[in-house]
View 1: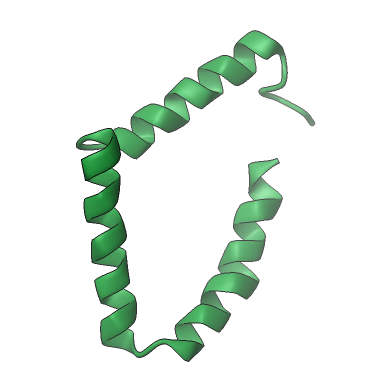
View 2: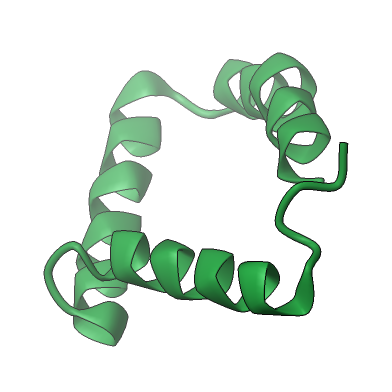
Length: 66
């Protein structure tokens, strides 16, 4: 389910957003989001959360939907 979402972000959403925001602001946003992510989830926290979600999906039998 994530792959179509990610593909749309990579091919539609982010290119459009990048074309509307100056490069220095775009980079600053990335830094801000990274800092907020670390604040909320700790260092490498996003990867830990992704692993937790994958574990839950496996327990529920929905990890591989193909």
